[in-house]
Image (cartoon, rainbow, N blue to C red):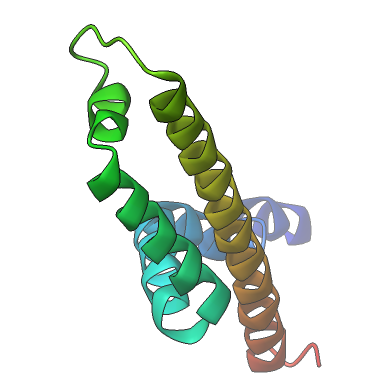
Length: 115
């Protein structure tokens, strides 16, 4: 009987893993929005990206990928700069999610009495 009961119980973390997986996009979006208000570096990079897009509308056209475009050397540099900035924001977002994961894990372990 003990073996049957053990087989019927799901892996203890399965429920939380499934819930996190289902909520990932919302968690990711919340983390990005929070960064805009809590991380000066992130906000500054976002502002610089927006300014580049306004100064070089070809960036948006390039990202849409719908039309054929021909770039000047200056526009090409602007796109490369924008891409570098975007990679930087993604790194900051991943770091925020990583830290949020630690925070959530600590709270969960405390809640279940493991800490």
